[in-house]
Amino acid sequence: MQIAFLRSVVFPINGLQPVIILTLATLLSSCSFLGRHVGESCKTRAYVRTDFEAFINQRFNLHSPVRLGIIPFSTQANISHYSNELPGLGNNLAWQVHRELLGSEVFPIVEVLNRQDWPGKKEEFSTGNFGAITAARDAKYDLVMVGYLEPLHRLDTWIIHTKVIEVEAGVTLWYGTSRVWTDRADMLEVSSSVGLTDRRPDLIHITPLLEESGRCIAYDMLHDPEVD
Image: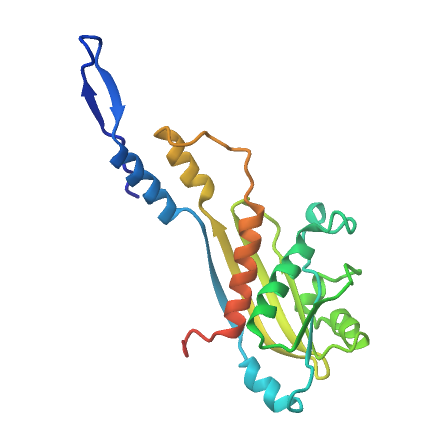
């Protein structure tokens, strides 16, 4: 990584000691560098992929109000749901994906199910998702999304597994794993080392990671990299 170091120009002022003045051009260059490199990134690997627009058009009647229900994602216990005022990271992930999919207009109806947890919810992700399918079927959904966030080993990196299942047949239409990360802490450390910002090791960048996670999952669901 290249780092733009601050240069200085020395001007004598009325015979006093020289005054070091930071050049404006260098400061602007450093801020521009940080602006281009600070942010979030993601990579998603899809193991099962479906063209949702084609599937909906072939599977359901024309203009049918196809309903996709998103069940709050499973997370480790200390960041899970507590109450409506403290919804937990799994709920926030579901709502973020919900917003992204609504904007795509691929699914006529997208809603978050008000079903937080049940025994074996996380474990069933790899063993049939029968609880999620039953909850979605009872609520009259055509498709259901389930997912879980792996235990956090780093605060700047999340790994999220997600599925979309056709409720009637129980068939998985899309299954992917997303790795989402932020370099904000690293770049703030760089900028603080040259005096551009204060050191802030206390900052945890939850909101940017949530936004990138929702965008990343929704984008990969709706775009085939080979076709794009």
